[in-house]
Length: 308
Image (cartoon, rainbow, N blue to C red):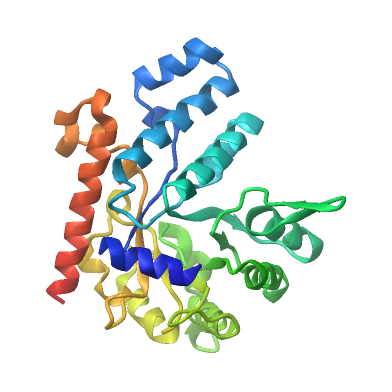
């Protein structure tokens, strides 16, 4: 799957991923009201609203981007109907030719980790048959429990030719409370990065590993260090736009081949119509605003890379 992701990035010349993280407050009133008219102000109504919101944005941007990253919590909050909307979103994006990174941030051990891996990336056996549950192409994994929590995911990835992005240095302000702690004179995130690189050597694509890393755009200097520690690991870079990251901050996340990183923007794209910059589109044309936000993001990153 890493080979497909790289092919899509090259074809679009857009090393970006759109985070499909649909808070109901992001969904324009007319979309909500249409869903509520059919299903009422219920969990089903909310799930229909976010599904229609997602669909419109995907339709407006799918020719410009290689991948999407739905954050499962935004769907889980609406219960079973929300999770149905999550699966529908995953399927629709794959039908449109997009690579889907399931932002699930799972981290457990033993049979629990195996079940998470099977549910999101593999096939579950039911009698004589097997089924793919949520069938994302990649998943994010929290490595805090160590190899016991990651190896079940790697096993399924090898079987299914799927991929992982393992949390190494996250973009949130308090990440340093643990991730920056020194162990034998080096920060924890460097130790995790080394382990990600080691895991990756066991599951290589043509030029990059199926085992990637999550490193926040808000820490560019750390990104430069981690890029050297994990030369063959693709880096998923959250924190662009709404969290403060800019194209000029991202240069060191990429390798000299112009590859090696994919940058995420969530509300900066899906809620673009709420920003002053894109207000002229109006809520009725929210998807067009998202498309323009994608164009602007790609231009920003390309320009930064060309001027590096």
